[in-house]
Length: 128
Image (cartoon, rainbow, N blue to C red; front, side):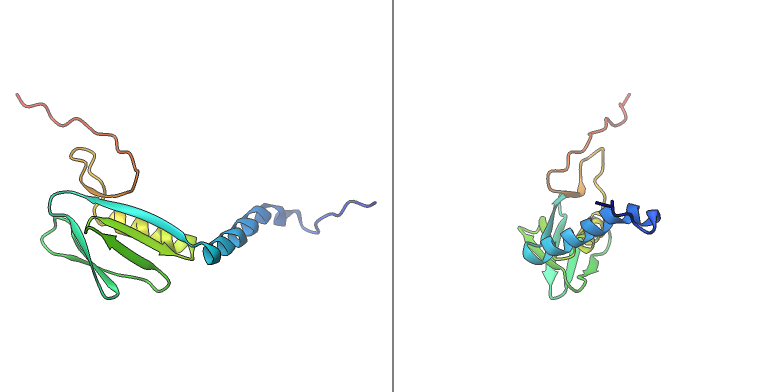
């Protein structure tokens, strides 16, 4: 029995990538992907208005975020956001874009963070 050889050994490195992309596409269609975020801070909240999410994150103005096609966003209690969709990359990117609006502060622990994310609390200045 002759061992099958690839014509081009350069293609070997793409086999795992192609397998992962196909597996993620199948999982996305059957189950879907989900990322959850929490908004922590006094007066920080989110509100769903049609195909937009309005965030109040301590800035002087509200931030309006347009929801991309293929993504569903649910908001519970104004401080818990659930991003769902069939495309793993797009779900993760949308969640990262929302988190980037107000990254968690290491001193006061306020901001937008992933559910279950553990932050290291930093000690502030010591007053004299």
